[in-house]
Length: 289
Image (cartoon, rainbow, N blue to C red; front, side, top):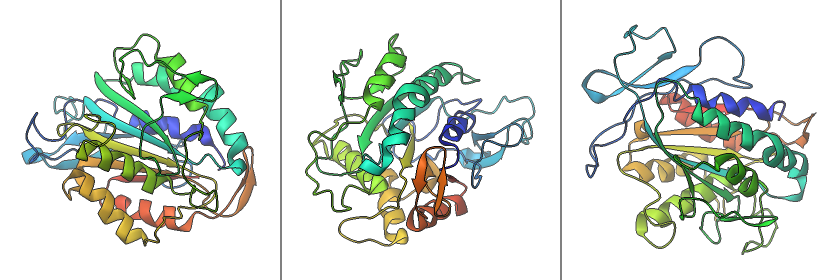
């Protein structure tokens, strides 16, 4: 990972956002389109937006360059966001940056998103899908989210402190062996959302009328257990939104190749890149290294 901070540019994906997904209680709607940007997408001008296109379908474009120059057309105000973070020992540099710098800055950035991202929920999980529960603790103990739920949410006036706490990732309750079965952030995020939809854990976290955003962060590669291809993972994740990829956004953050950077070593995250590429093909994904 050359620039972990580059994922802060995610806020440009929802810049100028308004309501998205299905109407409340209706699972038939579709979210807007997201631009894709490979490897270190922090560069360049205006960022991409998630907007409704004609007929409520997706429309992708750079901010300020859409077919709706007066920005009267709406994108997404309501977002459910899951961060899935590899918590293995090789991630020590990245985890330090997440807790002390990146997550608190991301909390501040959420408050400043243009166009009024007014209703968001943010959950954090490690890269072990057992148990499939959102984190309510950091390494220092309970994070005590102000909303009283196992996720952070808009309206909290302690959001930065909550991000800093839960960003100090703990795997105290993990049921993984540590033999690479804790290296599956996309699978872990999927399991958490599946549990929410089934009502077995994280109940009511995922909403039908919200855009679902998944951020998978690792310095190795997605290693699902049991083994799955990138295409199988893609189908599993699409199923979280009724098989409609246009109602979600996937961001993969990993090694574009084997390298050493400011945050230590990263392996070539081939499967994660392939998975992100499937979302990119649907204008719903971004990969950053």
